[in-house]
Amino acid sequence: MAGEGDLKLLGMVVSPFVVRVRMALHLKGVSYEYIEQDLFNKGELLLKYNPVHKKVPVLIHNGKPICESLAIVQYVDEALAASSPSILPADPHDRAVGRFWAAYVDDKFFPAWIGIMRAETEEDRAKKMSETAAVVEQLEAALAQCSNGKAFFSGDSVGYLDIAVGCNLFWLDAMRKMFGVVVIDAARTPVLAAWADRFKESDVGKEVLPDGDIAVEYAKKIQAYRAAAAASK
Ligand SMILES: N[C@@H](CCC(=O)N[C@@H](CS)C(=O)NCC(=O)O)C(=O)O
Figure 1 (cartoon, rainbow, N blue to C red):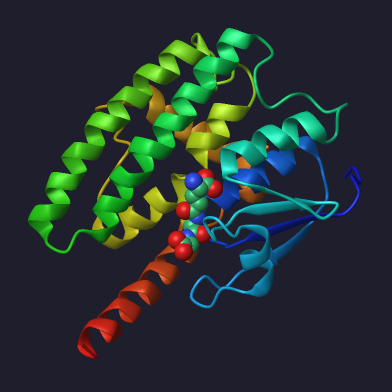
Figure 2 (cartoon, rainbow, N blue to C red):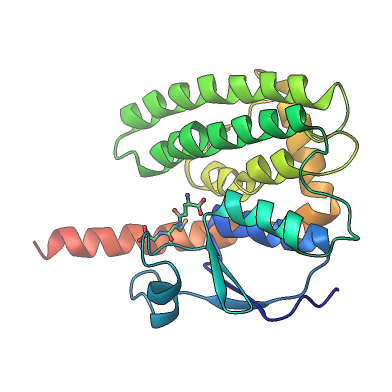
């Protein structure tokens, strides 16, 4: 692993945004200190280095913070381990298309699957599932557009859009275990489903993607916390 000065990552183990950054650091082969944050009781470091949003991830490079996972991934790509292959595509149009779809993932896909997770009735969950299915169909089209028939969004190997989407996959596994729902359905979106299997089997998938069970445990803790808060009202 390459040394790049003092590099710290403020994170939370089940945050897909943090996982995304860990994937970028792994792809670049960069070593760093990981500091887990308690988001129910935010610590001094997080408040100091991300005073605007007070959210993880925050990468601190030689004392200077970078916030927002997609901005961090780009920073990691541009500023660290220059001799490692790039995460973002080299071609400016491909980069712009990658950024467009990464923004779509965060603006549409993440809120869609979180909606399934947070649904309070089966009826609501079914409604959120069908909203999410429409978003997933767009991602299937994005994969066809970006991959040119190759194994990953970025071509023959994992890159920017692969980690932008792939960091969410362990939560989809958790929801399958918790509610029996299949968000990336091989019957509706076969190309994306095959990509998801390949991504999980890739080096970065195996080394960095958390196990779905960790997300199940976390979701149960949140449910208990919300139930206790509602009962004490
Ligand atoms: N757009 C941000 C999202 C980061 C985010 O939502 N982080 C969550 C954890 S998954 C967080 O820190 N939440 C704390 C809070 O909302 O107070 C990014 O891409 O980094």
